[in-house]
Amino acid sequence: MKLARYLLPLAMAFSAGPSLASEAFDEIKLNAGEALFDLECRRCHAVGSQDPSYGPPLENIVGRAAGSVEDYDYSIALEASGVVWTPAALRAWLEDNEGFMPGTKMRHVGITDRTVQDFILFYLDSISDTERNKQATE
Figure: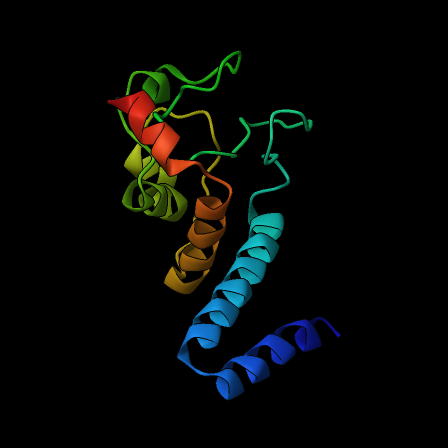
């Protein structure tokens, strides 16, 4: 039945033209990204700081400086890295966080499927205020 949730917007998109198609595709990418986030990331990371989480919350991660969530005990490697979580940095982290940043406390992620990465990155971008983060890191 989960498939039906994606088919209706897709069918509407094809019949409604390019503008609606783009919106429908974005909705599908967002739903897929959230589902993949739940599967791959949520066991350790909450979205917002109000939810319990082993790892730091990931709301507003795109454009945020690595190691910058207050009151979270980051590894020295991550805290001192100077990395800003751009889509490219997040993709590298998703694929091989230990190779991207040796010395991190987080277990190996290993999401190597670029399509899965794309959907998760789309979702992370949707829960981020990139303009605010850009100003904070300048």
